[in-house]
Length: 342
Ligand code: DAH
Image (cartoon, helix red, strand yellow):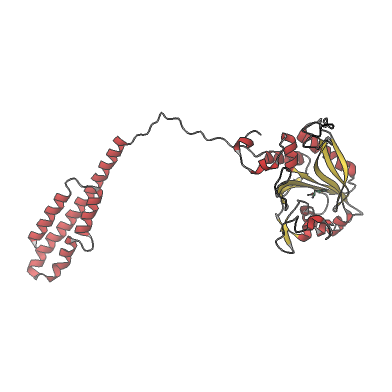
């Protein structure tokens, strides 16, 4: 037995002369693992004669402690050797120039939203957002939009089922706001809207609006006109001319489209029709009107006491007009070369 132990000790000393970390681990398993040689000597002690057992046990335990210590020390040393090797063979070239991270910037649409919000905050409006998933009731019915209206068609609007859809404008927030708040109301609602449009030079299935709603006593068309002019001059500068062109929306009466002088041809190339205004000299940017009495009634507001105006700014169009962008697809392509110009 004692001879066996001194053989094992010799073997361990040999194996630890200049070992790799793997060799050390193998040796540990071979000697001290569950089925290791020292482990099985320790297990076999019980079979020895009592007088032999004591000295053999002492020697075997001592060998086990010694082996464990040798192996631990060897592991630390072997790792140190590897590290020292790495230090001499691996280099960091501190003279290489670093990688510059480009600083991002706000998307042009976000910038225009910001400019609009700045104006409306200065005028005392609240800013609220609404749900993208709307009820058919808020999106159409409460807004006085009859079943026969083309925008209600499944070919124009994304329906989930008979009751829910992706809002096709921000106007349903007019209803949500009037349902829970009594006048005076002064609010704008920025957000995405969704329509079943094929992507082309003037359409994208997702685009951006900012709804405006003002309800109070004695609000009239002159107030609406004044605010429309303020928006145009805040975005495009004091010289920008607008015109209100009679139009139709089911939820306003009267209704108007707000046009600005064409940003591409400045309203001057009527003989040689311009691609943007098609020769009219004007570009349509958004819709507006006096809130229809039926809409007020639908929301529990008495049209004999209160009146108001509403508008739905086309943020993509305003941005295109501001920067002369002739294709809305640029807004969604995430091309940094494009985005960093603004
Ligand atoms: N909701 C209309 C659309 O998406 C835009 C609009 C027109 C909003 C007139 C209004 C409004 O608030 O008064 O085409």
